[in-house]
Length: 284
Image (cartoon, rainbow, N blue to C red; front, side, top):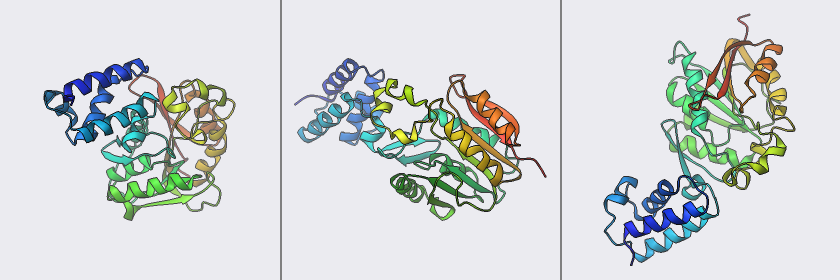
């Protein structure tokens, strides 16, 4: 019967050989999952035996991670903002870079207690919409996605995080069939050029939904469709924020300006990459 320390060492070695940069961190999380321990306790209790049932589960999870399946798919969840979100193969894995968009929206809202109406295009797991609703107590939100399976995940995440009374999710194709006006419109649309997807990390290229990745030949196809809908649906003075890929901020800002929106700022992620474009609708 191996000890926790021996299992951790073996797991780290195997994941490292599989080309995973976060081998030790991932092995620790997998051991925490099968033992019920908090991740920091795994190493601290390294001399304790790993029970056979837990060892068998650890082996099964380790094999999946060696195959480069994302940790969020293996564990079925991902922390985002202050929320714990369910994640499946039907949704993008919520990433820290996307929290940049949440921060950007909150930074330009002078009064977070206003009864705002929010719209999230391509909502996926619901991560952006739900993060904003968690910070805006009087707001309500609508999430649109073309995938029924993704909408089921988003709906469950709203329930789990106590936000279901203020969140609605609807099947749709960008702004088609949507009426009314919204104070805040956000989106993390597909923006990877189609030819580049197969060269991405296996966790992305092989396991995340291609429809949530591909932005057409140049990565900008979805913005061309989406931005006119944003301009039409924003209230006067309303704000929009969209995530963009590396090197795309200028082109997306130009599309917003051409649609009559007033550019506010380009916000960088923690890596210094321009990750979010923020603009306002004209006041009148």
